[in-house]
Image 1 (cartoon, rainbow, N blue to C red):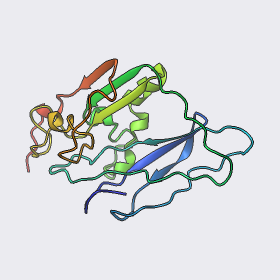
Image 2 (cartoon, rainbow, N blue to C red; image 1 turned 135 degrees about the vertical axis):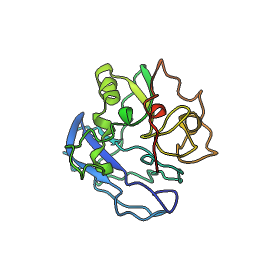
Image 3 (tube, rainbow, N blue to C red; image 1 turned 135 degrees about the horizontal axis):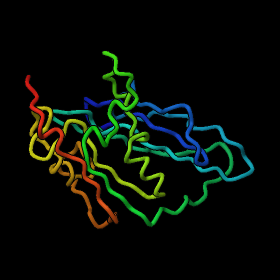
Image 4 (cartoon, rainbow, N blue to C red; image 1 turned 180 degrees about the vertical axis):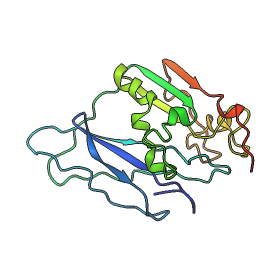
Length: 200
């Protein structure tokens, strides 16, 4: 489900027992304020299976005026078997703060004129996510294409210091709790968009 009348479609990667699957889940074509059912996986019964759903797209690509746009996991059901406790989270915690370079925008592009669609972005394949997997760390990312510290690539006035304080990046007035998740390290890769002037 999404929060308002405009939203960028979201894509999700699926891992089963630590192995990335060849398909992605997409909210493309979904209506706002509605729930959609997805078949995530067909797995073998008789032993424990671990399924990870990974959001691979950013909040709202290069938004000049961010609109409330978010996805809510409503419920999870299984046909047979039972739920077990999830794997414990890693004690290593890394936070990443960045722009399109961190978000992985266009890292699936083939550099043709058509390569401007959000489905050619994969945070799962970004350098930040690869570091997380290599370090076996629990990671949190605040990465938004076009955003800067004091100036954005787009002419918008909402910048990274503003959204950093939010729980939902596109929703003003959703204050973040800094005590609920405390990183051991913070990696900041910003400044590229502060040096770019977007002429409209």
